[in-house]
Image (cartoon, rainbow, N blue to C red; front, side):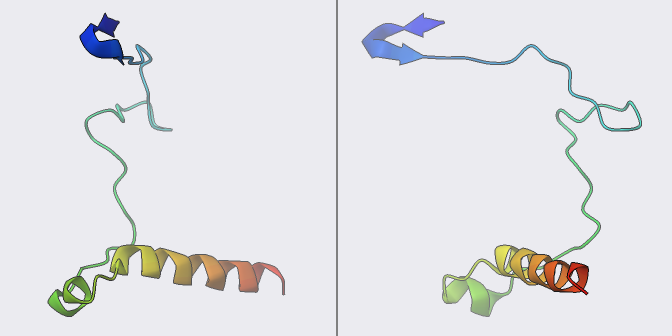
Length: 66
């Protein structure tokens, strides 16, 4: 869809399902690891969720090389 001032809007009409056939759109994926942000981390400008993800990914990578 084209709008004034060269703006464009696009969207998908696909229905996205999870592996069990239930809807993904508007629901998302339930995390199996929860990470809570802390006031200290926020004040320091850190992304504690991303930090945890990187830590877990590195641990998994190291363990897969054994």
